[in-house]
Amino acid sequence: MKIRCIIVEDEPLARSLMQRHVEKVPYLELAGSFGDPVEAVEFLRETSVDLMFSDIQMPGITGISLLKILQHPPLVIFTTAYSEYALEGYELNVVDYLIKPISFERFLKAVEKVALRLSGSNTVPAPPAGSQEEDFIFVKDGTRYVRIDLSDILYIEGLKDYVAIHIPGKKVVSLQTMKSLESVLPRNRFIRIHNSYIVALPAIDALDKEKVQIGNIFLPVSDSYKKGLREVIEKRQIS
Image (cartoon, rainbow, N blue to C red; front, side, top):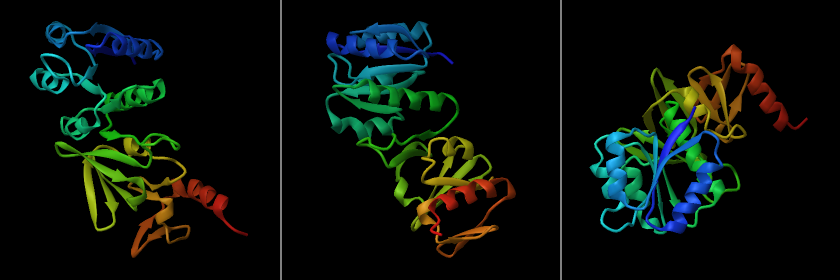
């Protein structure tokens, strides 16, 4: 799958760096690069793209204003030197928010989120272990994204086209599939035990062949997932 993208960045050096990052990713196709956000608006009136990398602080039109005036905006990754815009970015349904200077590793993580979104998931994945931003995900709850710490998740319940993420004291319901959510959760911390349930391994209090206990909740283990659960438990078993 090719992801057509544009870059909107008024600083030539920063724009050049983003172009080099794009060139390194085989499935990204650069459709245009603009130093003037007005030129980007004109381009997007005639051309459809999947993704826009946009600086926030630009002369004339900010990146946030640019996003708001587009009638049919593509997915957006904001780039800026100022972290205070992050919350507003998530409220605007922005895929990610990159702080300058932008390393290729961090750039690639953001692009992977776009690929995931285009494939139909509403989950923003947690970066791999070792990152400064590890241990949380954002899930779409209505018109906003809600941050959930992975350490807070007890289990996840599938509800047809929705999932309910159970954390202490409440649950968050999000429109997406179990498969899409399972794909972004770290496998060393979460395991599927049933078509309708994913459990957090640290949350398990007890288990047998038929069920898993988390607090006073008992969740069924289906036959198709028993082998995988047994293998995970055996790795942690003390003989």
